[in-house]
Amino acid sequence: MNRYDLLYELYDEFDAKTLLEYQNFVDVFPAVGSRVALEHWRRASDELERRKDAVRSAFPAGETLASVAAHATRDEAFTALDLLATYDRAVNVLVLDVDETLRSAGQTDNEIPRDTLHLLTELHEEGMPIVICTGQTLENVKGFITQGLGNELVHSGSLSIVYEAGNGVFTPGHGADTKRLLYEDLDDTVRGVFDEVRARVVPDAPEDIRRGCHLQGNEFNVTLKPNHQTGSREAVEVIDHALCYLLDLVGEAAPGGDPEAARAFYAAADPEIREVLERRGGVPDLDAADVTDETRDLLERVDVAYYEGDAAEVGSLELDKVAGVEAALEVLGVDDPFALVMGDSKSDLRVMEWVEANDCGIAAAPEHASEVVLEHVLSTDELVFDRNDATSMLRVVYALDRLAGLS
Image 1 (cartoon, rainbow, N blue to C red):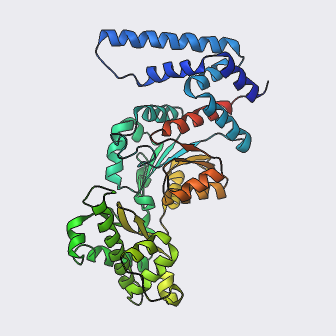
Image 2: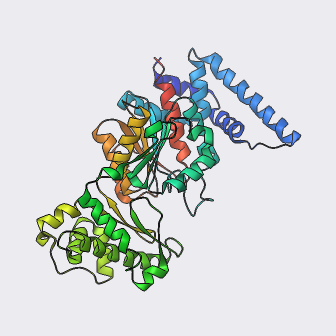
Image 3: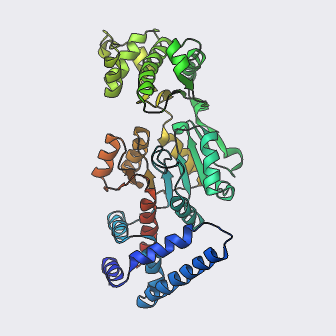
C-alpha cells in the first residue's frame, strides 16, 4: 500500500480530528496546582493514548501514522505528502521570521502562540536546528525567544539568531563562532557611508523627525522608527519624511555628495520609494541614467528600505538575510540543508528565492504577507497560512518528516 492509500485509510477510518484535539490539549494544557484540573488532564492523556493505540494496531506502520494523525489535519498531512512527492526530502532545518510570521502585532498579545512554541520545541528536541531570522536587534529577539522557548533550547547549540536582517549571527554554544559580526567584513567605502549617516542622522534631522522618530538600537543598520502608533496617520507621515531624509544623507555620503543622485537612483529601483517622493513633492529632476558610475557603484551596495508607517532604514545589500542564513547554517554544521523558510517581507523573499534557486528548501508565508512574497509562495508550493497560524506549517513539517521515513 502506498503512502497516499495509507493516509486515505487513516483519515477515513479514524476520527483524526478528535485525536488532534486531544493531542493539542495535552500538549499545551497550562501547569496548574488544581487537583481537579490535573485529573482532567490525566483523563485526556489516557484517552489520547487509547485512540493512538487503535491506530497503532490497525497498521504495520501504526506508530508513525498515529503520530501524524495526532499532529496534523487531513489537509496538512496530504500537503506534507505532496511535498514529499515533489522533493523526495524531509525538512532538516527551520528558518523563521518572527514579526508578522510567528507572531502578529495588533492581532494577538504580540507573543508567539503557545501551540507554536510547543511544536517548535518538540521539533527541536527531535533534532531539528532552528534559525530565527529577523530584522530586529539581537537583544530584542534574544529576550523573547529565551522567554518563549526556554534558556535550555536557546543554548542547546542548535539554535541560531540572524539579526538586523543579516548584519550579525548569534549561535550560543559555539565558542569563537558564537557571535559573528558580518558587517565587519564590508570594505571601508561602504562602512564609511554608514559611519557618516549614523553620525548625522539625529543631530541634522529636521525638527519633526527629531520629535516624531527614534533611532532603533542597531549594531549596524540605521533605522528610524515612529514614536506614534505603527501604521497610524502620524506614523506614516513622519516615516515618509524620514525616508526622504535618509535618501539625502546617503546621497551626501556617497561619491559626488549629491542627494539628488540618491533620490533618482532609489526611486528608479523601488516603486514604493518613488511613490513616497511623489507624495512629498520630492521627485528629483535628475534622471537615474545620469547618475555617475562611481556613485551608482556605491549605491548599488547600500539598501534604503521603506516600511509604510513603521520604519525607514539604511542597510547593506551585501548583508541580507541570505548572508546571515548561510553563516548560521555553517556554524550549525548543516551541510546539506532542506529548509522550511517562513516569512512575510521582501527581506524574507530573498531567502525564499535563494532556497528555490539552490533546491534546498520550501517557502511559506502568512496570508497578510507583502504582495511579492505571496506571489512567490503561490508560484511554488502554495504554502500560505492564516494570520496567527504558523503552527499549521510546523504541523506539515512534522508530518512530512515522519512520512518520509515510510518505505
